[in-house]
Length: 107
Length: 123
Image (cartoon, rainbow over all chains, first blue to last red; front, side):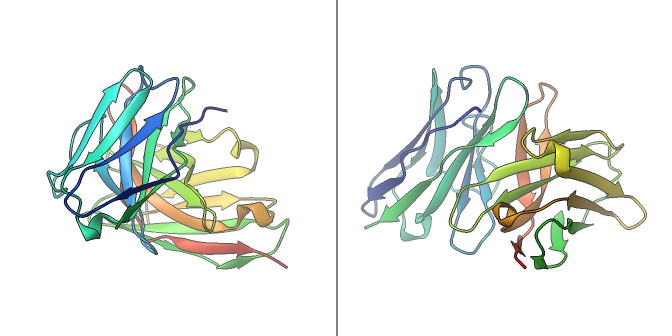
């Protein structure tokens, strides 16, 4: 089955930049989406169509795509950004798939 | 603002059917712009897409669950439902109802999400 691979964890100091990658063979042909999930809460969409930001999401969240890898960048990380982050896309058959998840720790 | 709220039993016995309902407020399940869907998350693990349904009844299921799964829409109650039969402990998870946003190219993302409900499969 199709897999989207993320690093298990990323650690960053407040004010620094966190970058979370997501790799998958179909990403050159499919958009990627990113969700933030805080403990005990439902996920929240933070990036759609690789790099678009929904209304209400801070500008410090941005997305980019290059080949088989997409990246979520959090610039000027704040303590409130500590959470799990998941990428999401689709395989060639139209099955929707989530990445393995990355825990962002703010030091 | 669209809001989703899951409801249903928190405990289901192995081999029985898991049934959940999602109440929709701030919008109509019959809106031609909307799909409706379910996603689950086993405790301490990642997210798994279960399936989507279009307001007219067209369904799109995760192949890994398709043989056990039924998603339906109840327009009279403005809600949609999930039924998963022959459950095992592996089906223990937080179940989220979601609104899939689907564009003309078929790209799909999920926003908003319900708060989620934990379903435990145990005797």
